[in-house]
Image 1 (cartoon, rainbow, N blue to C red):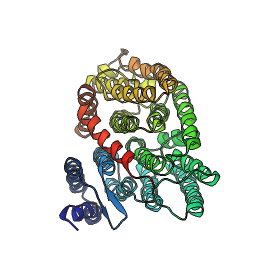
Image 2 (image 1 turned 60 degrees about the vertical axis):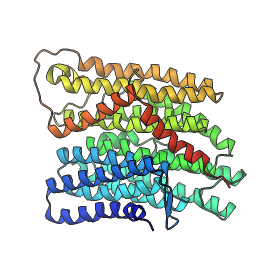
Image 3 (image 1 turned 180 degrees about the vertical axis):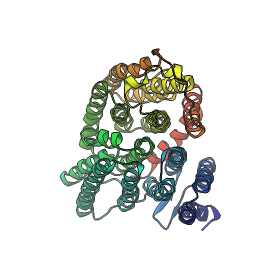
Image 4 (image 1 turned 135 degrees about the horizontal axis):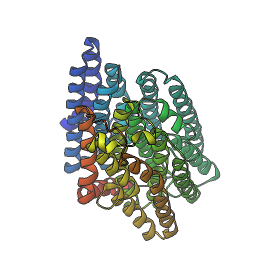
Length: 460
């Protein structure tokens, strides 16, 4: 093994072991500092690996390549931001940091999988800790944790059944393409249903809004910002590497993309609670991402990866502000009235991120949607792009409702300061949104490299 192969194994191991040791001393500041340093090192290593073109396998189980490195950067950056929020808002940060490090290992394993089995293990390793993170996030979150556990259990059971069908038909669980048949198509449908729960695809997202609402805002930021992206990391690999030749499976994904966009956007209009609104908004975003996957071209896949990257920062940044508002018992849209008078920075940052979700030019949300719709047009699916544009227009109704409330004056303004931890997270998310919205080429190239590698992977 080369030195960088050892580093690939050692960094996650040090992260988990370090959290175990520091947890014994119950030192929150030391644990936060350790996690920030280690997660930053993992991000730096993945960036270096991407630039250097690392491609190698560890024990034929963990595959380092441009695709897995893309998600390594995404997951590590997301966990760094969520750790900062958890330090500020969690009463059990030490437990969160330790449990979260195990969840991160599962996420990394999913992105670097070489077979259905490793994806299965990674999903389990991420889902079980997530249940406890919800449970520990705040008092009264038992119902939310129970619902997430039910979803995760059903998801993994359906995933297992799909894997059994695939193995029974092909005698293999490798991530390689198989000739279409009735059983293979049925397995594809089950995989979509299973991973649809993880990635919030309609109609498999039935309990997602309840889970998001019941959990603390920082836990919701992790679920929608990181766990959901793990679901897409698995779905993309399985659809592109295993079922690329199965037209029925991609037809189903196309139908689900349309239904997911309409369901998420229309239902979000009816919501008053901010976290429930963000939950349905997140569902609609999953529909946009599916368009790029359905196109099944390097440009379409790259567009979806770009949107996945962009939405993680938009979601976590928005939930950071919601966490700050939640600590002041301001949970509903009407509670945001006068926000610009209370804290101009919070109102500005919230507006930027919501406008980016709509698709405001010079933001990552606009670039992501533009690339996705363009890839659909180039693939002869202009009608799908039109439906996406229609849904973007529908989303204006509920996003604008929040922005208008934030900039509506109230009788007695009350100046409130945002703590430095929340502000740091929000600043990073707004910066990513604007920088890669104004100058998107580095992120586009990054996504292109990951997509091109995956599409070029030999299909046996």
